[in-house]
Image (cartoon, rainbow, N blue to C red):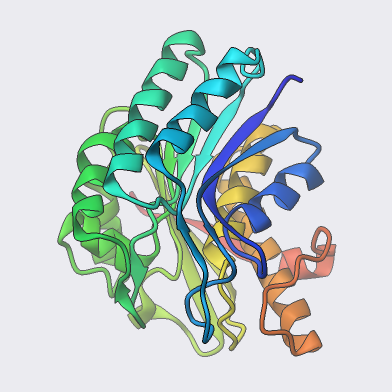
Length: 284
C-alpha cells in the first residue's frame, strides 16, 4: 500500500484534534495517509474525565519502523507532525525523519511544534521545547507555530507584526523554508479580523481572515494538515496557507452554526468564503 503522507500526532476517541482532523484533511485532498498516534486519549483534557496517555516509546518507534518494513514508504511524499507525547518521542521522531530523508531526498516535512497557547500557557513537558529547537525543527521544511509557541521557541516578543517577522526569521535556518505563524501579532488585529504571517527567505506574506468568536480545539491541527495537503497537490506555499486559513474559517463557521463543542469538518470552503481570506506580500 503506497503511502503519500505519514501523520504523527495525537489521537482521541471523542473529539476533533490531531489525527482526527489531519486524516480527513489529507483524504479530502486525495492523498493516502498513515496515522501514527503519539498519545491515545478518550478526549481532550478540558473535559471532566480523561483516560489514556502517551503511546509507549517501544510501540511508537515500532509503529514508525514497521511502515518501512511493510514497504509502505517507497513513494512517501510528506511527513506531518503535531502534538508529541514526550521528549523521548521527539528524539525518536527526529532520528526516523533523518533516516527517511536519506532514502527520499525530496521528502517534505511539516511540523506543528505544539507547546501551548496564550490562554493556558505551556502544556507540554518543558524539556520538549528544547528538543524541538535542537533536534526536530531543523528537519522541517515548514513549521506552523502559533504566536505563543513562536515566542517560546525564540525568546522574542510576538505581539506585533515586526516582532513576529523578526522571531520567525531566526528559525529560517538549514532545512526550514518557511514559518507560518497562526494567531499572529494579536496587537495588530483589526476589529473582527485576525492574521497569519508566512515568513519565507525571500518574502513575507500577511494573511487576513475573519475572527470567529469560538475556540474549539484542533484549529491549529486543521491549518497545518490543510496547508501540507494543498502544498503537496501543487499549490505554492502562500496559496496553500491562504486556502488552509479559509478551511479553518469554514470549519469554525459550521461549528458555530451547529452550536457544537467540537470542531466540525465540512467540505472545501465555497469560493465566497475563500474571497474573505486575503493575502498580501509585505515589504521585505
